[in-house]
Each structure stands twice: as C-alpha cells, then as structure tokens.
Amino acid sequence: MQALVLAFFVWGIVTKSIPVLVQELEAKHGPVFKFWFGGDIWVVLGDPDVARRLSLRFTLRPGLDYLKVLPHKELVLNNLGLAATSDMALWRVARKSYDSSLLIPASLAQYTPTMDRCVLRLANRLKQFAASGETVDMWRELVTMTLEVVGECAYGIDFHSVVDGRECSEEQQKLGKRLVEACRIVFQQGAIIEASRYVPAQLLFPVLGPLVRRVAAVFPDARYLKATLFRKLIHDVSEGLLADWKCNHLMGNANAGADSDRTTHDNPPSSDEATNSQSPSPQLSVADRSFLNSMMVGRDQPQPAAAKEGEKDGGKGGGKGAEEGRLAGKAAAGSEAGKGSETRGPLDDAEVVAQALTFILAGYETTANTLAFVIYLIAANPGAETRLLEEVDSFGRSKAITSNDLDKFPYVDAVVKELLRLHSPAGFTTRLSTEEVQALKKTIPTWGYKFAQQEAKISLVRLYRNFTFALAPGMPRTPKVKTAMTTGPDGGVPVVVHGRV
Image 1 (tube, rainbow, N blue to C red):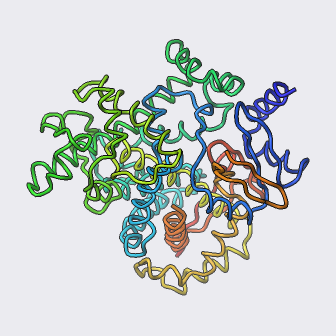
Image 2 (image 1 turned 180 degrees about the horizontal axis):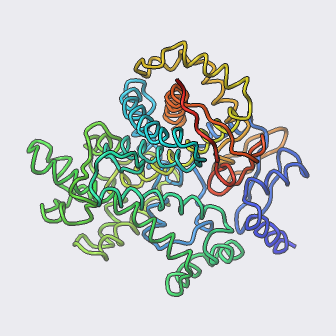
Image 3 (image 1 turned 90 degrees about the horizontal axis):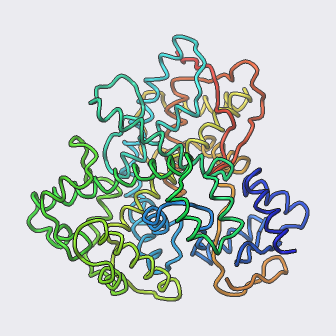
C-alpha cells in the first residue's frame, strides 16, 4: 500500500508540481496532514499563521537530495547554501552574513542606487517598444533586469543582461546572455516534468539516490547535461570572481593576509592560481560594496575542526581530487553539525560561493515573477493603475529615490503585498522538525524578503513614472499560473508599452 501511495505522489509531482498537488491534498484531507515519502514523514501545514510560526521556530531545511540528480560537486555546493543546508552551525554563520549585508537598514540602503540604475536601463530599453507599439513580453524583460540587480549587488559587476545600447565588450555580452539562460534552465528544471528522466526514478526509489546519480553521470540524458552545464557556468563565474578577489587582495593589501593568504583558510594561493583558475573575464572584478566582498572581508576566524578533517581525508594538494575530497569532508562535517554542533568558524571558499549562488537564484526569478504579476494585474484593473500613478506622480517623476523614500509609497507597498497574497512566487517552504509540537490540535513528530521588497518597489515606481502597460489583445484579465521552482505567469506577460508624457 505504501508503495502505491508513493507512486501516486510521484506521479502527481511529475504532472502537477508539488504546490499544486499539496493544495489538492489539503482540500481533501484538511490543513494538516502527513504522508510517507521514501524514508521520511512529510507533514503539510496549510494554515499560513501556523506555518509562519513554525518556520521561525525550526530553521533547518531537510536534506532533499532525492529531488535533484546532479554530479557530486554540484550537489554538495547546492546543499551548502542557506536555503538548503541541514547543518545548523553553518546555517547560523551564513545567516549572520545575510543579516549584516541585507537586513540592516544601512546595509540595505547601499543597494538602492544599484537597483534604481538597473531599472533605469530597462526603462531606456522599453522606450523603443513604446515608440514602435510592438508587443513585448514584460516577464522576459524583467528577468534580465533582476539578474543585473542581483549580479551587481552580489558581486558589484555588470553582467550586461539588459541590452539597452550601452557599450560593453562582446565577451561581457555573451556572458550576460549565458547567465540569463543558465538561471532560466535551473528554475525551469525545478518542475519535475522538465527535469532529467532520472529524477522521477530517484523519487520512486530515494534510497537508491547515489546509484541513480552514478548511472546518470555515466549515461546522461540531454536535460541532465544541460542542467549540469548551466549550473557549472554559474558556479564557475562565482569561483572565478572569488579567485579574482583573493588575487587583488594579495597584491593590493599586504595587511589583509588573514583574509587572502589561503584557499581554504590555510592554503596560500599563488598569483597564477588566483588569476588563471576560473576567472570568467579580465573585465570582471568584485566591487567593495557587494555581498561577496562583505562575506570575504568577514572571514577572520580559524576554520572549524570538522571541515579540516575533511580536507585531510581528501588531501591538501591541488587538483580536482583534492577539491572533491575537501567537498566530501564538508558534506560529512555538515551531517554531524546538523545533529547538534553549535559552534564553528567562518565560511570557507565553497560556502561563500554557495551563499552567493543562493543570493543570485533567490533574487532572480522570484522578484521578476512578482513584478510581472503586478504589471499584469494593474494593466487589467484601470482603477488600481490610476491610484498607483497618482501616488508615483505626487512624489515627483524626476526626483531621485532613496531607501528612506520607500515609506512614501503606501499604495505601491499594498500592491506588492496583495500580489504576494494572491500569487506568491514561493509556493511552499520546508523545515526539519527537531521536536514534537502541536499544530491545529495535531502533533507533528520529530524529524532575503526585505531586499526583494525594496527592489520591487523601486522597480514599480521607476517604471510607472515613464510608462503604462496594456495587455496584448486576447489576453485574459486573470493570469494563467505555472509552478516549477517558483510560481510565475504561464506564457509570460505580453503587453503593449505606452510612454507617459
């Protein structure tokens, strides 16, 4: 019977996506229900207040390796990110880095000019569509803009993903296009039906995950190859920029030895290693006001003993074998830390790269989906558009926007919050329960919000200062929705752009 239930659930995931399937099960079984999935018990909470309370109480995410079929290195790097780690000690250190860079008002304020600059580039690009009357897919335009925002905020560099006529090298332009495609593929394959054929097999037999991944590596299908290629591209860009940062600090700041004289906290890189390792482009370098720089500067403590043991096992020499050994050691250390270790040193190279990747992926399609839904629904509701334009105009259409000004747009804020209520880009979240709790009279057994809101508000104010948007002919008033890794508009948001006088 359990096997039949599992097969039914896997079929539902493949054909419908997890959020849609869970909503159907909730309608049948109520706001709290559980089911076996492989060797795990999943408890679904459909009540938002209870879910919010418990998500704050339990911060660890469960290891969901059976939802991904990736090469070992890519899987380990994925599981080192804040949103995926089951290592409490790592989670605490990573969360502290996010808090200091994204949640403190002074830190958040430093990203406002970057956000405004990137939206202005999109506005300049939209002028040609307003002049020609040509229909444009605003969702596709917005994802290129949000990639520029997270690229500049994460690394302090311009990926040139928005093509607006400004000068850039051919290499930078190609890199921007490839990064947009890489992020698109990663999110697209979040829908099991779009992923490798090995993913459903691994879902049916989760205990055989390591074997399934080995077979996939030897006999890959096209989707596995594409996912691996594009994930590697994003990782290589991050690792190359990290190497560039370390090289610059080695040569330009003799007093920064504690931060730059190591590859994994105790191995000094040579200049050749730093410059030739994986640098994505000689024009790209990490800026001082960036998320990556903040994390690197903050590394001033010894590495945790558990991770060092992993390095011993893998060897401390250079080359692919040593690197994989260090990553394997980190994975083993993470499984132990998740069992209760509360202390450790700062993030090492792989963990820094993992957080930067989480920053990019978390801020890329989610914000674009939010903005696309807002533009769609505002275009379908003239009264709401009138109120929004009145608020934007009352502030001043040529006045510079600072983070302190965002409180002056209460209707814009209400629009964003209402959209998140109607079409949240994150359809569900997971937590690992570490103790029994009561939820709606049932027992559950043991087993970057502010940044995105600031970006969304600045984008809406800047865009509606200059344009209004009309849905393309034949588009329904209510958007169709699709869910993969995030929830977004199905078929994009085709609109006609009208310039404002």
